[in-house]
Image (cartoon, rainbow, N blue to C red; front, top):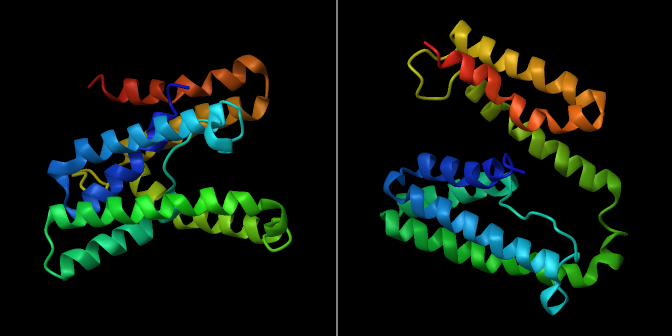
Length: 192
């Protein structure tokens, strides 16, 4: 479970860095974690009939990164500052968060419209849209002075080489180990 906050923290980091909201990053991350906590509470306790009644950690989605960044860029192009962008981000996300709550009341009829082919295609497109981000991060990140150096590429390959085989084994110990194995190549690269 210790690796799950990474998926909650990464979207605000990407949004903040892309929109030039460096001073607001701690706030963005805190609000993302707070919203995740509230969502997880609602999901697990079925408050007002909302949620599955199981412990399902809720977090931010990468699906909305493009739209969020485009909205922030639009506010910036209109002459808005960081506070205007933050107001737009939180206002739009607050209203958008109500959509799944309302739609969840009509899930059974919607299953006829959103077939596995449609939902699978959308999920595949989300993954495809993240390929560029993963390749850039594998090479050291956008602002790395040694971008695409052999040490960065070897670190990514080493991480993948440790993680993927253990994940494929499907044994209880092997399934638990990848949660922290990713840190080994990184720790080795920090020695100097």
